[in-house]
Length: 157
Image (cartoon, rainbow, N blue to C red; front, side):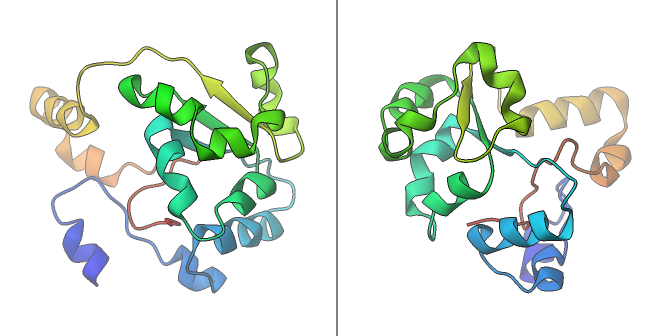
């Protein structure tokens, strides 16, 4: 109920995934997902900003040991992320950019950093502009996360 209240007015789906799996933390949810969908090749997606914070999560290193990890450039966060605790701990498991496309096929721990164009605009601002320009706020609110992306309230730390 608290998650639904917090999500009010945002393009966020609140699910009971972790309740259904009997988990509370990401480190427990990921192995449960892998067991529930054994033919699916999961990859953990995160921005460089999260790469900095992830060592504060419960048993964070097990996330890297459970799934391959794709880290995306987030401008000013990237340098700190690439020299931080998570990158240092799994330095020998970093995949070269030329091999990064094979990440879903790799056995963890394996991770890659993807340099991507960084726009000087927030996701909230982009959603707001899209909704205002097209009048499609309803569709944005009902659109499911794509490509395994996590929305607030799902499988977090």
